[in-house]
Image 1: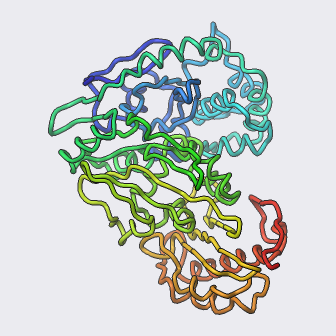
Image 2: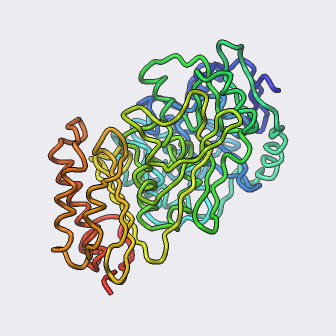
Length: 493
């Protein structure tokens, strides 16, 4: 067992044995390392001023991703390379993305600039991304600028990020990869004592045993939610177990029947696999948080925190996803919709861990639709999220799975509506009027800061009708303003 964390910074190994359970990367940089270039803005991973880059080995190759240092716990850097805005200049010369921001007048007050620089640094090092304005705006959705305006920043990105990669980091990539492999020692990490600690087990058995002994500990995957407990709710979390070192927990792979992912698989890991299940899943994934959030946040963590407005659970429920759990030596599986019992309550016993998720792909006779309604297009939680999977035979619905987020205390299926849709034909609106009426009896939504009860009811009804109209053959260019999908043959034959 190792009693310190180790990570690379500026080509050297940083070894820290004094690490608080909830000490953030931002606090380490500003208060301990004396590197104040990384800024604190919102303190909740929303504005991007605190963005830094983290390099890890992905299938043996060095990959840089942006993270929010304000909510990322310091212990989560173990085994990675940390890159900050102070690290980019080489021999007095600015990095290409920094130079482009200067040339395009992409900075005014400068407070947000380090975060933009670091997000663009990760785009500069990204592989196989189209050199388009949309790529840039998607990449920068988690970085806010309040005075310069985005046009010169986007122009700087287009000028600098899609050329041949040539900087100090690319030239020493082989050396960095070797150093990262050397850090992967296979040891469990434990810092602290029995009453206050941060731990990072290396195997599932070790994690299960540790959590069984400390069921009051807080499990952390990406900290995109737990981090806010610390920065916004000012909660003291004396026992923290980070699952990011558990072997194979980061797996996200296609199987013969669907997609299997471990509890540590991030939204970024799962995004291309979800896109291949259905384009609407890819569109939804791109609107969950930001690049920084998706690089850290995990799909299973989004489920385990049990939010009634979590974006991924309704879509996964509609697809018939299955959740895997383990407590000590005992493992079990259950349909995802059965995991959510009530507001803030899930079917998970003390000491029990969510270990993985299975998402089945669509059969040839099935169709899927998913729509997210929020006040902002990017970086916002849903007011209403609708997802449905229909099975059709000769244009008639023979089975329906419909799930909503934001309509109840938990993500939930619209069971009365599902029953009313059996026998309906999407191409014949008169046949599914009963289903639209049944939806009013499936949910009793509340009014809150995101939407009123009446708005939620009307939007849910409209989204269901929109899905049926599309499936019935109406071209999507008549039903969608953003995130279009290729028009399909009507399912009415």
